[in-house]
Length: 323
Image (cartoon, rainbow, N blue to C red; front, side, top):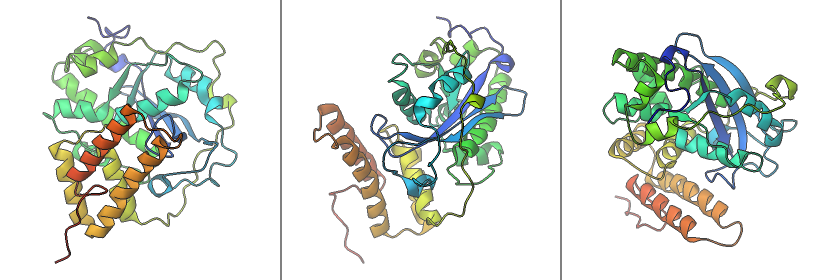
């Protein structure tokens, strides 16, 4: 089975677009995108930013403690509806890439759904690709940068632009490693995993919109760097937990990483409980906004509870007495 229309493209000619989103929460259809960036990447050229903008969510802001974006920041920013055609033009004929792509692609697909119900692009996850090349280890973006010698412009900034640029450089490093291992085409890359990776890469590329509206035609609003008043430790830990539970699965490496982060930051048990409760409450709130909890949502909450429990504590679990 060929890996889609781009199957025979040599890796150095495959057009990739690396993207990253920041959102108001954890639930794709309930929590809008509030920032998106897209970066053009080919194997042998410097990654180039194609799109970088805040997005007005048209609702109250959430997850500010993660990304630092406030409702005041997004005043004057385009709504997602204004970005649909420019994004389709950027994605057309390209393979989408993200780090921890299951999170970003779900949000992108949900945001696109009202205008493009069948939006289902070919995509690649740098986190999973590194796991395939490293024998199972799937690092966070920061860990991937450290392991591959990629310099992060602003460590822990939670800027879509910074993260997509970093992921673009990570992708280039991984593609060079794949080529050293014998992968010459996109089809060869898909053969690294004949399951999930191949299924994702087999999809036909996004078709260009008829109007070919480019980002230049839309008044964008890039984020302005500013001093964060949020505790760096809290932001770093919440990021780690959200990254670990985004796919509602926890592996031993993620448990080890989060436990090490708890020790590194010197978090007290009460602080860990409060942060885990916030993650759980965020998803619970989104699921119950319609005053109805269906079987799928209940199952997701149960899975999230088990994930948080494996990371040290979940809401409702027993609290160990202080020594």
